[in-house]
Length: 305
Length: 246
Image (cartoon, rainbow over all chains, first blue to last red; front, side, top):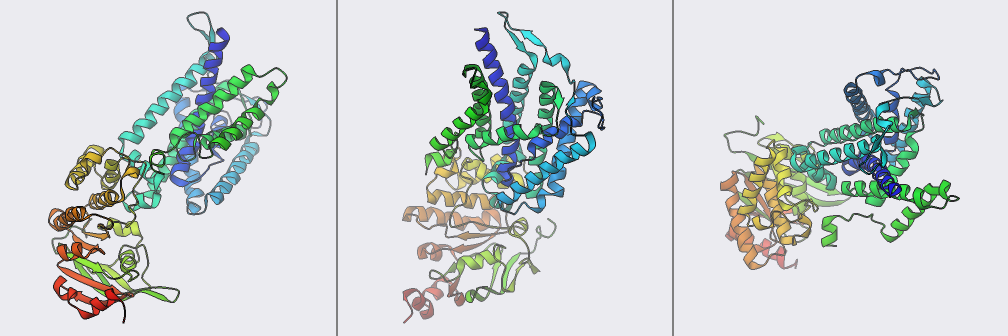
């Protein structure tokens, strides 16, 4: 029973993390048809911004040592500005190119960002002790111990999801963004300001990445310049199996991938457990064979094909 | 906005507009001036260049020669959304609605982009949908509407931006006689309700003759007749164009 509850919490927290990542990808894809492979590296840079820029082996906290509220605000602002800069300096010049071209540009950007990190901080992993109080356990009613951070990740994710739903439903920019996601050209013709809207999508995507930097670094306790790469792969897979272009799909896909990973870790025989990710990918392949368009179908295509 | 809010009657003018596609002249030195407050019909057999002319007047197609002018100012160098912002709206034969979004929000997008709050935009959208008899469909996804309703929503969306000119591309296509009566009533009311000039492309002669004060007839890209419905209907050149070239 204890094990079951711990597994459920762990699965939800993994799923939440992947859902946030998939949303960050999905936001840009929906308005720009950009699959931003640098998204994971945005998260990496947000993590490195916490420490003093130096190649010393032991990381000294810079922003990471400030008051927690300041840490959150500065890191989120930092990643938002980074994301906006990549739009204004790079992506706006390729936004009318094919999605493949944009994706390759994002790969190049990702490697560039990783190498900038290596240049400034060196290539070796760095231990960082962020929000140590969150890594402790909390006792649930029947004596089951759960990591506080896992509960925090779940809570933060749901707060952000609700905020995003309200944004899309209630605000002017939200309705414009939904329109642009369906038909960008038509939306512009109806007076939607394309550039402003794309910039806003970068801001939202960057803010999500910034929050994820904090969650991820707190969880891992270590920074490496490549740490964004494997998680980005999972975010991408999550958006694909959820249904490319659907934000609900991104969330569903994120949870599906996260929960599948954790459940497989729990139920796979000891010998196969090291190959968990391979098993996750196998499931992904099966899901896509069964449902190539993703798990979440769009309303209109559902009701009238 | 200063140039769009003008007490003088605005005009949308095609001056010697030609559109050529690799040897094919789709629109050939066409002249026409649409005035605010009037309904001008644009007719012609299939392939006459009607939609191409509308494309040229709304920035979707750069004229190969000639100019499009809004109250005397050349606008044919602008992008479609630039032209849109200057108060020229259009609809499409294929509705091009946001299929995933509810009908009301399809119209609201245009209104919020004008600067309306969500609440005001919604009220504005509902008013338009009411007028078009679509208020009971406001909450359904636009993608499930029948084509005839799609085109009505397209009209609402075009008018939600409070344009000075609206170009309607075959709004009555595929409509029953009863629906045609409704759409004729709608088109007739546009100038008075919204103060704009209407350019109406339509194949349905009953609709055209019923609502237009003036008609422009194209055939193979060229103007073959202009005049009142009666004049055009009795013009032998027009009759010949429609009944086949002998």
